[in-house]
Image (cartoon, rainbow, N blue to C red):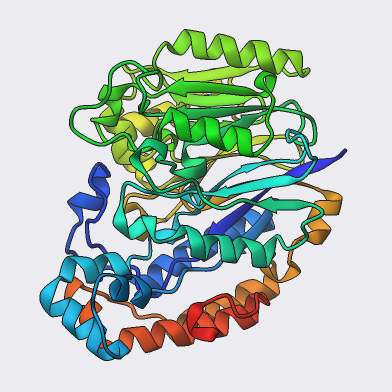
Length: 447
């Protein structure tokens, strides 16, 4: 059956700020406590969505989560009305207020792992929201994420939305940032590639020493079971521990895949040649020919990859069949990465074009083009079943652009999180957004 890949990007939330909450994410920690521009961040992401939609890609929108999260603060013992909760948290535990105010859900590559109906045993598209259990500010997301996904992918005939895995370190799950899928055609059965950083029960080898490994093998295998994936349609691989220690906190910082192509660094995986062999053999069994484009360490170092986010890119197939690599402008500002990209046309690779986007506000907090999107393969019947209000077009772009102008600040510094007006502004923005996207009452304050 004919199918296509849609990208659902997260709208940057009104409380976008740089609190440096993500240990192991180099950019996040380097920009800790600096002032952020939520309006610019939201518009940068929105323009990327619109430009890709204009090029013929199927582009959807995912809403921000409600922030600051009074639910989190109340669960931690801050009582009283909203103003009292925020004032007391700002005074007694500003780090908890920062966690409750994080707009990290904008990086929807962490929202869930998605398996298309061609791969699953019940013929439905499966979603498992990520528990994100290693970081407090992210561990609070999955219930709200599930609610948002349920408002968009509503038809249970076509979609199955699971609950997140139990929130324990043994089952640390960071979603699609550690998952990709290879196939011949999107609508045909493919091979799903799960990448983990460690095994809770010792089934991997060495672990990183400096930064945490956020994805476990046990979590990846659990998601594969929940989605009803067969053994001939899955490959599990471990990240190199020392690369995690160099700032590669998710696999999508060192590798990206699309259809039959894997674009990755030379030092992405343990036993990298064996990983290629497994992917090639299983994809070949489904009628595809696997291709790996491996970037040598001698040309682009791991440090270059982390600072430029060369691999935190989107690898997309245009309607005319050409394959496009979507990169942040930081890739043009790193001389070695720029030189490599300029050489692609003479390397006989399957990458035909490179598109460059300004995502500076997101990049400063550690998220590039790939972080901002959740990939969902849909056939035509499934596309029709998606809530139509979330598909990007000229009308929706104009509405969202005006919505950002109306509701977003152009500056948030750490101290501004204590501003009691920020909660009201954020809620007003989200209340208006649910009307624009036709999502219904998905936020707690609306119920």
